[in-house]
Amino acid sequence: MTETHFDVLIVGAGLSGIGAAWHLQKKCPGKSYAILEGREAIGGTWDLFRYPGIRSDSDMHTLGYIFKPWKERKAIADGPSILKYVRETAEQNGIDQHIRFNHLVKRSSWDSNTATWSVEAEDAKTGEMHRLTCDFLYMCSGYYSYEGGHRPDFPNEEAFAGKIVHPQEWPEDLDYSGKKVVVIGSGATAVTLVPEMANEAEHVTMLQRSPTYVVSRPAEDALANRLRKVLPESWAYGATRWRNILFQMFFFNMARKRPEKVKERILGMAQEELGPEFDVETHFTPSYNPWDQRLCLVPDSDLFKSLKEGSASVETDHIEHFDETGIQLKSGKHLDADVIVTATGLKLVFLGGMEIVVDGSVIDPSEIHGYRGVMFENIPNLVSTFGYTNASWTLKADLTADFVTRLLKYMDRKAYAEVRPEAGEPIGDEPWLDFSSGYVTRAMEHFPKQGDRMPWRLHQNYVKDIFALRHAKFEDGVLVFRSRQTGGVDVDDPASAAVAAE
Image 1 (cartoon, rainbow, N blue to C red):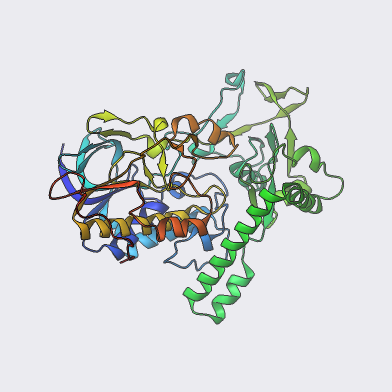
Image 2 (image 1 turned 90 degrees about the horizontal axis):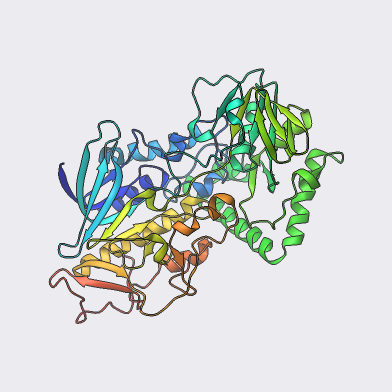
């Protein structure tokens, strides 16, 4: 095993990791760093997923980086366009030269004596183990497993004579033109697949156990495109970004305060799209309130158009079993199929499934608490990017990078070698995410907890996080720093009363 030391190791070369590297280069130019990427390409989610119609379910004026304006006309962008944007960011800023591909991080061990992380990464091709060390570990590995999605076992599925595919493992040679397709699921992936596959398939059926709220939005942001013609690019981007942030926050707060009114409006819009004869109550009326789970966004009403045209349909029912020609439903109805797509969700994992060891003790994530949603109780010199469930992921990623770079500069000024959050008294246990989606509830027992007060809370609010992360005071009584000179707690040089951003 080879060993190389860096000031900072970033794990993941997707949207978050490339953004983290940009902020680090810009604000801490003296820091050496490398990005460890388990796969062979830049892009993360946007390179891994190859299913038809793959696109964002957030607008690119907020999913895009704060420092790089989105220039395309479509605000609800397709996967290849987003992948191009991420790779362009890496190439234009020399970030791609810092990436070590085929470095799948398996284990990271902290040694307080040396104040360093030892990171073990496996080469997926050769099986070789690489060992690198760093002073600071910056996790940008996302929140789901790259090894495969959630895939329930269906009764008698081996009897099906056609193809069964999961969107996370889409085969390049899958031919569905002129064929009958059943897509199992009702989430963001399913509502993307159905209208796209309906363009070529004989018919596509979306089979769901229960409905999801579906909202249409124009793929192009007309105001944003007009602003770009009359304002400097950065001004137009900033104005559009803040307009969309504030609208999203308003809509989310309305859903929390007046759920019945918001529900009525969403269902009314669906009924307007589909016509009075469509059974919206059965197929698009969930049992939960808006934003108890993430809403599904469809650009330019594409799903609704497919349903109206008859190239696609929805069945709300339960699976009895598979058979040779399709799926037998509990209602007695049979769905004929040549291809079945199991859009049944993701598997969430904490820190990419990496094992964490601190001074010889393996950390059980379920027994610790998160700090401001970016650090973790008793884990030194480690920050993780975890985006919003009710807004664009990158909004939180940019704020996390602000926090990291301010923290690194602060530690340098004070000659600190280590920082870790410590809870001096009981802080309560609440789920990491208060979200009822199946992919979330299946995984929460393996994730850290929230506390019942700040700074142990995880905000789902961009404005609150601006103050909690971009302007946070480090002397909050929770962060404990250790000096380079002594290796012990520095009580003679406490944190100043205020910390400047620079």
